[in-house]
Every structure is written in C-alpha cells, then in structure tokens.
Image 1 (cartoon, one colour):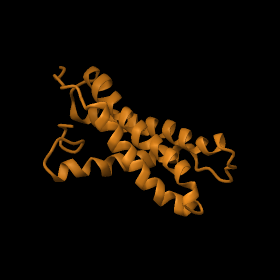
Image 2 (tube, helix red, strand yellow):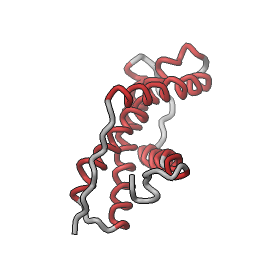
Image 3 (cartoon, helix red, strand yellow):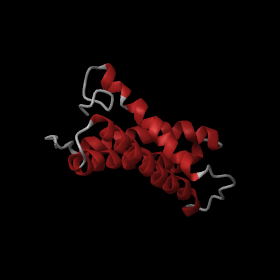
Image 4 (spheres, helix red, strand yellow):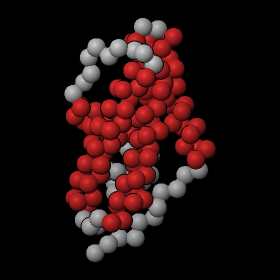
Length: 143
C-alpha cells in the first residue's frame, strides 16, 4: 500500500533567505567561541552546511524517498531518522573540512558519527516548532 504524498515545494528565494539568515546569526555565535568576530564569515559558512544542506537532505526524503517507501508509520519514521543521520554525517564532514580550505589547522575533530547524531537531534528540535503551532511536522506524520 502506498500513500499519495504531496511534494514539498518552497520558492528558492525563501529557502535562501531563511537558511542564510540562520547561518549568519549562528555563525556570529560560533565565531565568538572561535576567538572573535573575525571568524564570522568562516563560522557562517560552516553553519550553512547544516542550514542550507540540511534543507536539501529533508527535501530529498520528502520528495524522492518517502513516496517510494511503504506507508507504515514506523517504517517512515525509521527511514527518515536514517536519512537524517547519513545526511548529518555528510554535512558534518563537509563543515569540519571547510576551515582547512581557508588555511585553518583542525586540532580536534569530533568522531564522524557524532555529526549524524547531532543532526538528528537538530532536526527533531526544528520539527518541534511546527508541531507546537499545530502544523505538519515529523511528529504528527503530516510533514
């Protein structure tokens, strides 16, 4: 049995505005812990991996993978968490590698799997907002 899922659609302009704004704000916060606002552009670029890249991980699940999976709720939940984990690992490796492109030396990098776990937790938190407003989200199976 398959369900008729509505594809996720959002204007690219809206996606860019939201993801870049979040990256700029969180980049400023991260830059302070990196030693000062001179690191703001790099920190924002690192956060952009998760904001902009994370958007496309979610779009991949919603528009390509979800319609091809069995409709059983437990299966959908498991698949989505696995996609988040794998996407988080890929995005985290990209974000952690970005400073090296700009000549920074990485002294300590988290274990690869921690990126996946962190991204799953981040997605669960992000999906709380529409759930609390009564909109479609991961928690109610409508988003």
